[in-house]
Each structure stands twice: as structure tokens, then as C-alpha cells.
Length: 316
Figure (cartoon, rainbow, N blue to C red):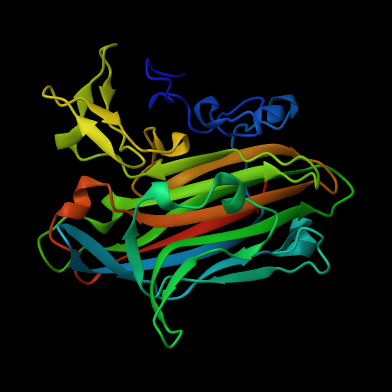
């Protein structure tokens, strides 16, 4: 359900996105509108059998740039996908042609992640192109050494190699979080996670996505015109009226919206799909960044803070 501003309601079921794979209508563009004809819908969770996972970790310190306090983070580890392809009948690859299928994929993490505005992210088509692998952007010094990363990005492909339709569940979990050693805002409060999930065709591609953020601090909640309470963070920049009403004010249309709340304190999102047809291929693109236009980035920098997330796939 959409509110008066055309954004997805916070009360809409997060696990049901009928007729267009899963992306909410507020994020559909003319290019991805064709997904409405794809009968690929989520359904009630069943018992899981085999799982795959992706792991991503971020830690935070900070530094000041001009008048903006910028978070400088460090990622320990890699973004990893693991899968038992024989038992699950699914295969993974960073190449859409699947020259080989694997049960394990990794992408470099963010050893020096920096706060970044979503409006400076690449275009939707560039982020979710059929070019698989690492799409993080690095800032290099004169010697070619990495100074910091603006964001983490990766694209990979999931394919059903079984002769029959396969059902599966996907979730992105928050496995561990270390609070800052100093008194400041949580690193999670500025984290944004954008997930693209589209049926790969090899011809006219769609780019449906959803952007997630932790529920806003209660100090930022406000009552909407319909009487319900707005608890979501904006994806990027916003303005605040005298009555506390927040209005998204990002420059790009895809960022000028409220993010979808994390499902819980331990889960970013989860949903089930009943019908991944034989040989059907899904393109996943994951982008994670620390949103510099979030007002939480104007607090004291978090020290010795970290968050670990993992993305799980399981046949059901």
C-alpha cells in the first residue's frame, strides 16, 4: 500500500510482492514494469532444507571533512556466498553465462569504508548490469593504494539446474553488532542496504530493487496525515517541517523515498519464492553504504563499532 506521497507504507507486508517478483510499486520504473507479467510470488515459509550464505562485516571510526562528520569504517572479511549445488539444485556464478557453476563466491569487503551520498551512486542500470563481480568504488592515492571505499557493490547470479521447479527462501541477517566504545549514534543507524533481485533474460533486463534501513530513532517519528506513525528512515537527504514531518529530498528519483525498515533487529529482510523454474536464472546485485545525508552522521564518530551481515539462500 502506498501513502499520500506515493511511498510504500510501513504497514505493508514485507514478504509479499505480487506480480512483479518482489519490488514494491513505488520503486518500479518503465524499464522494470514488465515484471508484472511474471507470476513469481512469495509465499508462506516452509521447513528449510539446504542453505547458502553471504557474509559482510563493517566496523567504524571517523574523521571530519569540512563541516560534515564522516564515518570511516573498516570491513574485516569478505562478502561470501556458499551453496551445496548438488543437494539444493542451485548454482552460483559471477558470470551470467555460467561457464562454471560454483558453491562459493567472494567479493572484497570495505577495508576503509567512507560515508557517501546515495545520490552519487552509479545509475540503476550500472549498479544492476549483467557484468558480475565486484562493483565497489575505490579512491586511490598517487601510488595506486586504496585510501577508502565509497560503497560496496557486487552482482552475482543464481540458477536452478534442476529438471523441476525449485522453491527457495532468501534472507539477509544481522549476525553480530558491536556498539561504539564512545557515546555516539549506532553505526547501524546510517547503514543502507540496496538489494536488486531480477529474472535474468539476456535481452531486455529489468532492475527492480528495494532499499533497507534500520527503523528511525523515536525522536524522528512523526504522525502522517492519515493518523499513522511514520517510523522509517529516508534513503538519503530530507527536510524537516516545524511539526517534525520529514520529507525525502534526494536529487535522484530512486533515492527520493523512505527506506523499508529492517524486518527486525536481526533480519534486514526475508521472503520465500515457490517457483524458480528449471534453468531460470536470477540476477542479484547488493550495494551497501554509510549514508552521509543521514543526520546520524553528524554525531560523534563511532569508535570500535562493527556490524556483520549474512545473506542466506535455502531450498524449501
